[in-house]
Length: 479
Image (cartoon, rainbow, N blue to C red; front, side, top):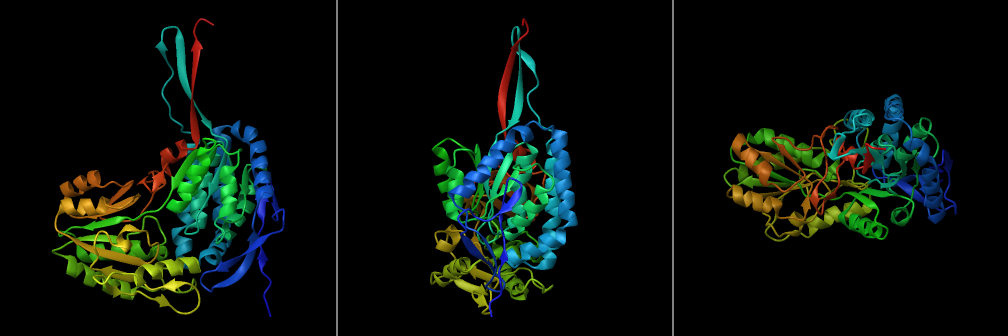
């Protein structure tokens, strides 16, 4: 006897709609491997409708005052708090994440980030007006860009949606947001909440697959395309957007180096690194999954990390003892397992290295040592609960290896030597350098990388400014 799937729908111009041609795709709970909902597989007609709605709503939303937009965002934040349990339930079905950690580690920062951007709406900074040429006064206007096409990933569906819509709406833009095809449930619920607060057409959600995202980016209406996703997806977006010179905001992959020096408190470092490496099953662009350890403490560190990994538990969302849940989908499970299966002969699996259970997409916390700089698992993003360990001889080699990948999103340094920490923070070619910690983020500070990790910033005033454009206004004093 089959169970009827819950029906998710697009949110366009203030109303929920099926795809115009009726196509759908099943949505699977990764903790069980079973479908629980169907979502629209949106095509050109749906994207056209959403873009038309966002474009029609833009002039009025643009002309609201910062205080009015702040008030709307604060209402959204309050509503997210009030309906937190609904959002948690939707996100847990989306991702299989532990319920307790979703409640404690995602809802509070999401609400805080919305409130931050609500305040940022009233704090735009710019060069002061002045007479830079005799008889003429110049000043700078900061204005919203227009319609923003936004594509969110599956690793943090709720939080990444917040990172996209909150600064865009605060700046006076309108939004067409596409969640990942594997995790649309929480975004559709967000649409119900946000749609009850902002005017119709200001916030729209279009569900679908990669083709839907491509149609959004290629559409002539948006002035900006923003994506959090893989390097391949980011390159495709940049290429498509170049055809009509859209502004592009890309937060792509990561391969964060974690540099552990000999003077580090090893037990403290292992505890912090294991949590930052395995949280969310390592499905985090900033995850602490590439550790470089000074040769004098390498063996001690590896032994302690392997022991910590063996004590970490993965399992079902309602199990309060688990640190992380399943990988998001069967393809991701296959990818993570493939990296371990293809390990070179000189590598050693110190812990884990296998699937857990036969239901859902769970993978054991894994530690791999004995690796070389040019090994595949060092150079490519695994995006799973696998921590690699390399041994370095001195600071210069640590910097060379840390920077010796195509990604440049985040990094961390573990040492008691303040001078060394400051040198490393300068020499590491990454958008974030943590010192004696790894993975905390705050709304006030920017998040974004260099090289193939993309460009543009999320969070902070810098992230807010990315959703604005600058206009020079000059007036004659003789008029």
